[in-house]
Each structure stands twice: as C-alpha cells, then as structure tokens.
Image (cartoon, rainbow, N blue to C red):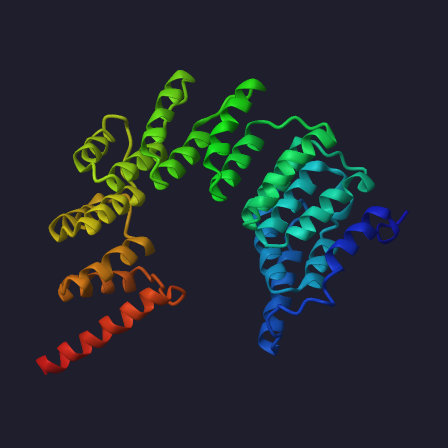
Length: 360
C-alpha cells in the first residue's frame, strides 16, 4: 500500500489541513513573507527525516509555520520527511501533541490524542503526560485539571511523577493552592514520590501568594522525604522572606548559597532588588545591581530593568536611570511589548534630550 493511500497518512493529513482553509488569524502573506516561508520549508526538507533525531529542527519550523497559520506548509514538511508512518510510534505522537500545545493549537493536540487508537498507536502515561503538558504550554490550565481527573480511570492510565507535577502546576496556576498541596497526599497514597521540581513549584507559588508559614512547612516535608533542594527552591525562600520584609533572614539565605555550592543567578538578584525597591532603599538597590555586573555568571535581564528604571526615574536619579537604559540597549533588551515600560523609556529619552540641549 502506498504512503498516500494509507489510513495513517489520510488521518494525519486531515488533522493538519482541517483548519487551513478557515484560518482567519494568520498574518497577511506578502511576497516577501511567502518567499521566507518557502525558504523555511525548503531548508527543513533538506534535513534528515528522523523526527526524534531532529526534534529541535522540526520544532522550530513547526512552530513558525503553525503560528502564522500555514497548515499546508506544515503538511508539506511532514510529507517530505515521510513522518506519517511513525504515527504508530507513541513517542513520535507524544512529541507532536506537545508541539501542538507550544503552537497554541490545543484543539489539534486533543484531536490527535483522541485519534491515536485509529492510528494503531497505544495511549499510555507517555502521551497522557504530553497532552497535559500541551495544556500548560497553551495556558489551558482548567483543561489540564479536567483531563488529569477524567482520563486515568477512563483509559486505565496510572499517573506518574510527571503527571502529578504537571497537575500541581495547573492547580497552582488557577490559584487552587489547597488542592495543589493535597496532591502530595494523593501521591503518597499511590506510592509516587515527589521530587525537587514538584517542591520547587509549590514553594514558589506559596511564597508568592503570601502563604509564608505553609511554604516553610514544606521544607520539613522535603527533609522527611530526603528531597534535596536546588537553587530554585532557595530563590523562592529568598523571595518569600523579602516579601515579608525579613531582610536579615533573606541575607542569611543568600550568604548560605556558597556553602551549599550555589551561585546566585539573576532571579536571586532581582528578588533582592525588588525588596529594596519596595523599601525605597536606593543605596542597597545600587549595591546589588553592582553585584550583578561583578558576578561574572549572570547579567541584567528584562525584569531587572523593569524593576529599576521606573524606580530610578521616580526618585529623580536620572544618571542611574541613564546608566540602566544604556545597559539595556547594549544588551538589546526590548520594551516595546510592555506599555508601561515603553512610556517610562520615552519620557526618559525625552529627559536625556533636554539635558543634552542644556549642556549645548
């Protein structure tokens, strides 16, 4: 039987093309854009056909084409690389389901998951987890929770660590913190042990939500379960202490990084600086900004400048604001998608011009 006449081919072809004629959100196709699309497809078609071995290449191409609504081009890429027969391989299908989520095409992910039995492809916890992940990447948190609650019993799938951690993330994203923490008891009942990532998600959410004591209690549970905290866990604790204005305790956590073999990252510094910004302490803000530049292992990011530039402007420290702005330009940080920041930058640049005119 030829590839074009196989049931697998026909079903996947239908999945890729079902919305190609009705999509109205795709960007207008200009001659230049059309030429870029053709080059993109041609470049990908010249790559090896193994999806698993070329996942990054296919992922990048797939997302660019899907996000611009070029479903027929997606079909063309997959056609050429002869990927359709691999649809009977669950690992391949799981990757595709996840990619649909990243492209914000959850309906396609759900459809493909439902179609797997007709493709003679098994549905195990592997593809189940991919579907939950697709929900997260497409910000469909309620759907992730719904699927987590309904599918295991329906499909005789036993959730594993990844399943529970994904569900906990969804509960945290929807603000259902009590349910998120109750997942630990359910995991214990089903003999599934949480790991560092599980606790990292819970710690960060509870500290950010102002539930400081409950977050602190999680450390006892981590110790009981012999889960070793990573830098992300300590950063979350640092954030919680800063939010509670426990600066001396926050400094103790920071000073303990080196003893634990951790190097502070940009999240560490941003959390500390945000605390001192809220406190209105310009001297400490400048000190910690200087430490970022001296660190040698990280550099300021968008969040750094979003915190510091308005603070410097609000305190009338135009020289510091100029330094920050020039640094952001050097790092090619763009603020165009952040309206508030863009307004601040526009005012700041205007002030620079006035100051320069006065000097002249």
